[in-house]
Image 1: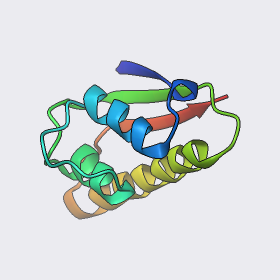
Image 2 (image 1 turned 30 degrees about the vertical axis):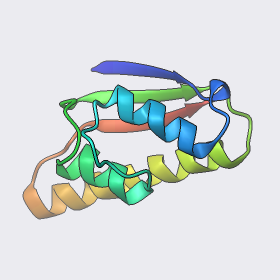
Image 3 (image 1 turned 90 degrees about the vertical axis):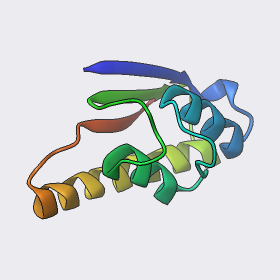
Length: 100
């Protein structure tokens, strides 16, 4: 499994973090910054060119809005993976992990 390392401490805002994440997953133009946009592209397919499986490991965060965004994204991806398994019988191995 490919591991992508992102230094969250280098991002001043959630928007800046989203820009880095979009670069890493090779998001196509028009990709949004919402949790839903990332779930759609990472689990359901769409505006991302990085094929699974992969793990995005975010380090350097000790609370704050970016850490909250990463945690929510991680949980949302987990729920979407379960939903995809239930609906289509397949697992898309994509994870986001917050490493402090």
